[in-house]
Amino acid sequence: MRIGILTSGGDCPGINATIRGVCKTAMNHYGMEVFGIHSGFRGLVDDDVIPLTEGSLTGLLNMGGTILGTSREKPFKRKNNTLTEDKPAMMLKTIEKHQLDCIVCIGGNGTQKTAAKLADTGVNVVSIPKTIDNDVWGTDVSFGFDSAVSIATDAIDRLHSTASAHQRVMVIEVMGHKAGWIALYSGMAGGGDIILLPEIPFDIHNIGDTIINRLKKGKPYSIVVVAEGIPTVNGKKAAQYIAEEIEYETGFETRETVLGYIQRGGSPTAFDRNLATRMGGHATELIAGGQFGRMVSLHGSEITSVPLGEVAGKLKLVTEDNDLVVQGRRMGICFG
Image (cartoon, rainbow, N blue to C red; front, side, top):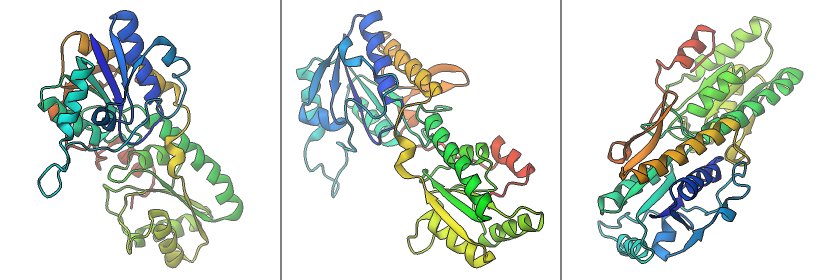
């Protein structure tokens, strides 16, 4: 068989490990030919396809980013209810030209949606979830999440010493537009005193009271972890808005830190390397077994798969009954 592989959407630790997992399994175990598609779905539109060899995979396990490059190309997107170019037809032409029996799509929510539409055209597709936000529906964890949480937790750890030395309130903003998984996990692991998520409404007066009450208990500094997607006013960034409101409410000196793209760069953690390797291998198993139109997923400790059609357009969000939220509240952590 001849398979093509692409990476789409934002970069994230573990993509190259996944490419390696797919390709090594395909080449060494199943004797398949593998072709790399550059710049996501744009590579299928532009016929930017190259053969991959064992030599192409050297050093990928711990390498950040993606050797195939990425883009946010949405070939099925319509303008005024019409396709500006017939990109789907261009992709099918590329697939036919290279006689590709299946396309492996590695990406987040947008990629899963596009992959499902590509499958609807009759193309054999297998997808692998990739996101630091951990918001892809249908899998317990996506590779990249553990790496991002580790980076954010390390940053929070470092802010504790500065906050303590200066007796300040430190606000750290982490990624997560609609889902607060990184804020929740890094906030809990890093000993955050207040954790604000897009999914859970907050009252700024309650946050101020929490900080004042901590001072009364002899705790002169506080760590506030906020997801970038929490609601703000006048288009202000999350950390800036919360820091300004805390200073207004309490009069305490407050500083903000925005972690930004550091969270999605660099080497993946050991957990993400192994998860990426397992997911890549399972994707190739699905192809060998003719099980197309599916997304690889982690359920408990088992690598399995779910129908792509069930994934597209859905988000996995934090709920108030999440065990970390429940336990955090029991320990006195404020969630707003």
